Length: 263
Image (cartoon, rainbow, N blue to C red; front, side):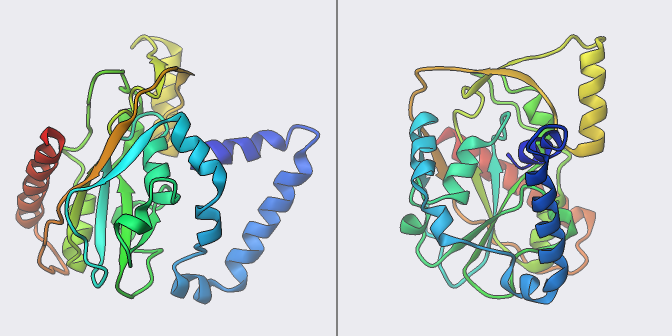
């Protein structure tokens, strides 16, 4: 959704509504440069009122999903929630963690979710402020999975994606697997031929923008699907984790994710 809104703002520059994009850009620059210390201390801007907007409930009903708690997450700790499956748009991940349409605060009282759609997990734990009760949600390189979002299939790009494990080890933050079923069923994707210019455009755009533009159209009569949150996987604190440590907990995490999927 983030890349889509960015492209929309860029598109509006060439329409009669260009002033809205200019005003938004000015506000963005001024707000980020006026009080960077305050934003860093607060972890960015977090609006509970916006999380409760009624429009998110309509979005949840249109792409029916249900957040399922598989284990308790204590409010006096921090967690790194690793969300799968990305699909084309991560609509169900958005509903579950960016809004209250599926009752995150009711299921996990005392936890404050942060979804890092833009910030890569390898760069640090920003925008989370240094206090307890924080749940960071990351999507692991979803631009690859978006190209293989075929209804009825579950294709994850995870074997060589270990940055989130390294981040968890540096901060001693438990890893929590999350799986959103039904992401591939939300849209039908038309994959281009491997030797076509469309495929070349997708590949080039993905390398430059970490986002995969797809030709897709909506589906109807979607059935409700669960979005289970798994059990936390404790990890030790290693300021400079070795590759052996990263590989060990990466394999451990993949087994936990597979168990969550089968449950």
